[in-house]
Image (cartoon, rainbow, N blue to C red; front, top):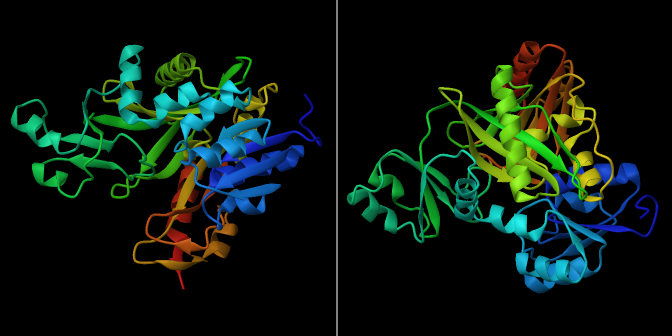
Length: 384
């Protein structure tokens, strides 16, 4: 099938920044695109051929949209899977496959999938409602501390909380959830696996993630990770196993913990381009967004090697600021060597909202990390 400069149409469910960055690549290849998103202010709106307003969880909206495209993909997991299943039955190519998406959409189902397939993960308990957790604590079934995670619709630190005492459960939504044993770890790692529709598979180098202690969001992504080769090899092997068992098509970001004794435990996965792969835009031969397009269109996969060491700094809304966004001192960071800001196009900032990211490339990872620190301390996402 000819994708380039033709009538072929790629549909994307979700119009956020991941979609926008995917659309840079479809523009490069002159592939026609259509985006479905519930917000008029979607970052993707400026970059697609056709923009459709609609709720991603609404059966009719997703189904009707899917009927108008040749291949359908996602940039966010929270979409109507019943509509996707019907589209698949009717011959529309949906990637990731709905079967994989169903496992991933629900954190409890995802965790059960790991244990069923002998994929190492932290011990956990599953609850139909948060209110059942107190009984479990009283009966000795659950020990502090643990990590509470809502089973569905959590993202970017939303829907996750460390629980050290009963009072910490107050105010949490009474929903299906898991309570996960808190693992003492020395690193949070991520591996992105790309799998094409015909089964070609490649993995990106392991990245290391440094988190913001309060927002539970990634502050820095460091590639290559500063870990020994054996640990890196083990992380890539486990990521490949997850991809193989789940039969993902497109990208699968596998987030993991490296424990004190160098075991690798899978934390969670995302079936799409991911925050832990943004540095690939400047640092890799084939960036993650282009790779996702190659994979879902069953084109040969590109090289995942780094050209150079890369670090990504998330730009999130500063605390105490809500309203029309201003990127303070952006000119200052543009003076620094190897620095590229990516602004997502969200007009309104609020505390901890992802507004953009900055990549720092350098032959020397230590130097890159120093510049990344400077970037973090200089640029501020505030409001008028």
